[in-house]
Amino acid sequence: MAAAARSSRLLLLSSRNGRGGGVLAVGCFPGLGSARHRQHQHRTYSGQDVFPTTMVRLTSIIPGQAGSIFSHVGDVIQGNPVHQRLPAWQNQQIVFCSTASPSDDVTVAYQNGLPVISLCLPSRRERCQFTLKPISDSVGIFLKQLQAEDKGIDRVNVYSTDGTRVASSTGIDVLLLDDFKLAINDVTYYVRPPKRELLSHEDATNLNDLKTLVQQLYCTLRIEEHQLNKERELIGRIEDLKQQLEPLEKVRLEVSRKAEKRTTWVLWGGLAYMATQFGILARLTWWEYSWDIMEPVTYFITYGSAIAMYAYFVLTRQEYIYPDARDRQHLLYFHKGAKKIHFNLEKYNHLKEAVAQMEKDGTILFKRMVEKVEAEKAKILTCKKSLEEENRNLLLQVQHLQEEQLRCKVNQDGPLSTSSFVGKPQ
Image (cartoon, rainbow, N blue to C red):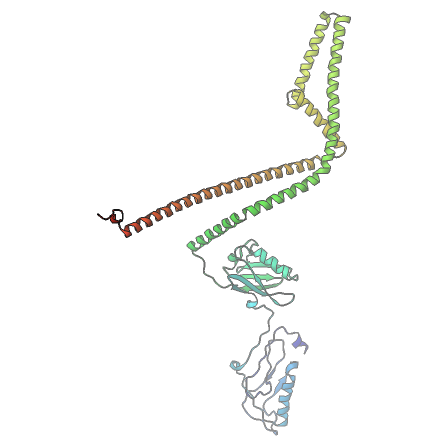
């Protein structure tokens, strides 16, 4: 019994005899016991001749067949007539039990022009259909749908028939051109999609032209809505960035105010230094010493000032101009103050650039909308003028037709008689 329970494969042989007698032989693969006949004779046993030349050896009995086998042996012992059957393999039914998944577990069919892949999910063991779009969907989208539908799927991939893994970016229309393998966890399914006729070059070109026409029509009908949505999106993003920029802007203004104050003090200090220098030189020239002594001193002071300006150019690569020098000094004080309070200048500059770019985009979008409105107005005016011209032409045609009708009527009535105008002779 233990040997039968540990067996991996089972072969059941059952007779197709119409009498429905008990099972005479149970055969199986090596490792499983069998009940067989030593001699195959077509004879009838009586109650007095029990097992004269035939021996039945039961080495192992399957639990499900024990009752029929022992009932058969009982009939033999009691003398009931028992007919032996030759083991004709053509009249036997063979049942195989295997762990391999059948090839039809995954099926592909077309419904309403869309491919529908039907397969059995591993967790709940129920079939599920996945409707895919041949052009827009890809293998990666299909695999994500599988994992989203059944959380028990850990690994899922698609392979070609030669074992090459199919990329996730491959389109569904390309995948369904040939057979492929679908590997879900440890089970591999062989999928045979139905063959479909490929489009000819002319049909494919017409299809591409149709797609382009639909896209142009969609863009034409949705352009105004798209522009309005884009404008709302830009306004929302600008407001969000301005909210983030507001506290930084307050800190920047405070640091800039302090730097401006210090720069102003430096400018006034320079003026005070020059005035003091002028007073000292005047005192030394007219009161303390003479001009002959102070002239070389003033010359060297002037030449030293020229050297200082040239040194400024060498260090800053800028000419010494008062507005530029003032701005440079202001920036130096500003960065020093920002560093002291740990002000994030990079974030501030990034936000300012983003706001400026979005405002520029908004301006361009507004100009485009204005241009579109002007173009629509011009088109409406052109249509109005053309309609007025057509109405004028129609009026002229109506007048011409009325004149023709009147002329035809006069011709049909004939010329007027002169007797109606001339009286009878006296």
